[in-house]
Image 1 (cartoon, rainbow, N blue to C red):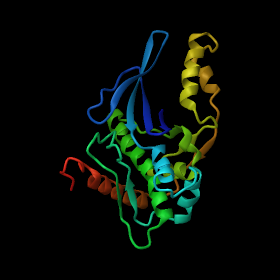
Image 2 (image 1 turned 90 degrees about the vertical axis):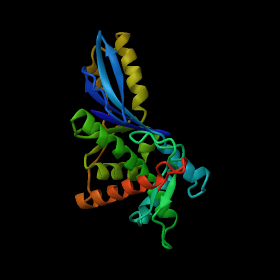
Image 3 (image 1 turned 60 degrees about the vertical axis):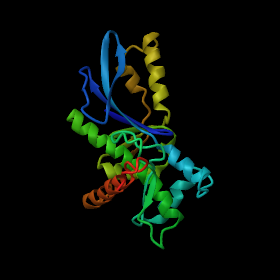
Image 4 (image 1 turned 135 degrees about the vertical axis):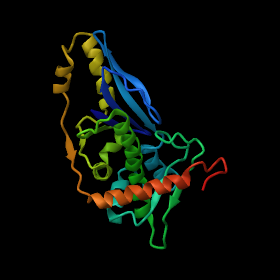
Length: 243
């Protein structure tokens, strides 16, 4: 299973079971949990700017009055109009790990406006997540059947649908947004004897909304290819070697 938490940043974890996968580049190997003497491992990737991108739109640019406004504006745009935002405001995290990268907004035309910029910001969160997921798939050799999601930004249904579209797999949003906290509490309950097994905990998971990919595969390939081109433009900017 693979899960992405959309908080201020994004934090992706893939359960790799009881045998650790030693990542070759761009990811971290970590302990998922230890229970009854058995240790489970995960691959982890951290994205610096997740929900913080929406905060930037609100607090620094004044393009939206609240985070919820971003969804309506993104839908108004219809498409991104060729506009891409790489939110490398503090560098880029996984899988790039480029501390000298800086944020860029590219593809602007006279027709670019508030809806296109807001949409590009939301799309950037999904593109960054795919960057990490693609590397996880290569490292682990397993493609997930779906991506489970939690965190405050998952309330944005446009973002969740675009995430499913750009990944080409379903995105599963539970009714409990703070699944990370629930997981910690659940393990504590196991340790205290409140729950008898992991299977019992799984039965308590609250189903929510399933976002199914709707995007044409050729469009997915084109959009993501242009994103990678934009990331290249942002790379190594602060050290003077950006191209």
